[in-house]
Image 1 (cartoon, rainbow, N blue to C red):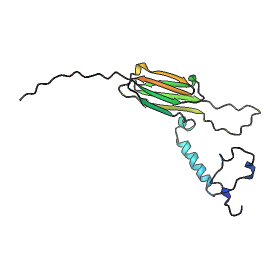
Image 2 (tube, rainbow, N blue to C red):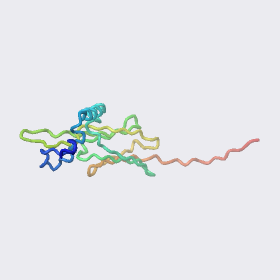
Image 3 (cartoon, helix red, strand yellow):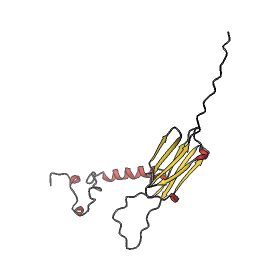
Image 4 (cartoon, rainbow, N blue to C red):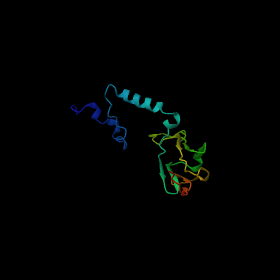
Length: 164
């Protein structure tokens, strides 16, 4: 073991931790390992507060021949914890909040990996969106927002006389 640098050796107190590989720090033992942690903390703290704690709402936007469809992954949220709003008739807001579980006396937390906090996502809608007919539904942790499209107006053909 003496030939293996200290940052590759497993810590003996992790012997019974089934998740010990998750938390292995490859920079442990380097003099500047705290620098990397500090850098990570600085990046996290530079995010807007609403994004720093819960930014995992991944959203797909597809356009079909008849509608714009947004699908957002919001696992663990109830429909009461999610809001869908239109601002200035053209900006779709999808926001939600997941509250942190309260610590109770006698509880011992071993890990806290589930994110909590708020998220806000905004999308500028195109001119062909019928913003007065927006529908939203939620099933199995997926929010679906459907915005019908304005029927494409087929132009009238008008003959123009050519002079000269």
